[in-house]
Image (cartoon, rainbow, N blue to C red; front, side, top):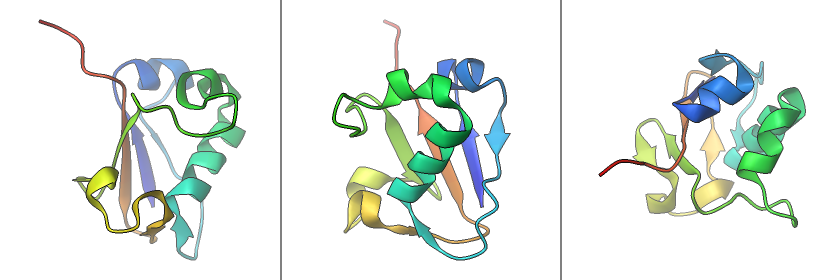
Amino acid sequence: MKILFYASFRSIVGQKEYHPGFTEPVTIKQCIDSVVGRFPQIKQHWLDQAGELLPHVHVSLNRVDVDLLEIGYDSLVYPGDELDFFPPIQGG
């Protein structure tokens, strides 16, 4: 599985992608925990005080917005899948 970071998130973690090394399917929530564990500097940009993902963080699984998935962040990510993290869109 491949986790990709875009825009400011890429700058914060210092790399374009991360391969967490899971060999079995895990939930999107578990992937988020893995990223925060590996890159603790992202925590303040992603999680609120209760440890929940902030609403401005956009996540897609295999190019499908996680909010459109039937079980959302409890959806499974399999080896070979791609999980993308986008900051809020800015501009005008």
